[in-house]
Image (cartoon, rainbow, N blue to C red; front, top):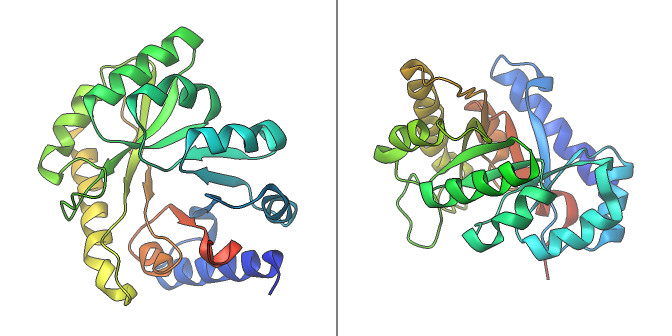
Length: 228
């Protein structure tokens, strides 16, 4: 199948999952994850209607953004090192992986110097996996409260990557947990925190994520094929 066909199929599956859970298909946005994908294949996806691209590495993104520019919205979805913050705030429209006050302070400082307010998600490490970024569940609300004081960051929601499972249903409890945590933070009424977005679900489990309340899913392989 072509990239356009893959994209259409993913969009159809998202819509069906939304309908199954009593939601509008328009309530879920698709982030096409383009790590290691060449610019020609990305161009095909954009021409077919993909509107948001997610990149894992600042350097790789810089080259692609230079070629595609503002034809799409750019999300940073990888683990962000503090020393890359100055580049990230210039390149990206939204950063999905903020997981520490140290990183938030540096992003805020760099955004201030550019006169920008950067939308962010707080990344959760729900299974406490040492190989993944993300704040622990017990520390999430405290981090949200701290970051809410930073004038040049705007918390829009939460993001997570559950453990990898061959069976999508095994990821469901993690997606449900993130939705519950989002609701807890909303109930806490932290000033200036929107908490309207939940980014969860990838190629192998995005339908389950949508059923559990995802407003963004991050899909690469199902659109672009297996990476080298």
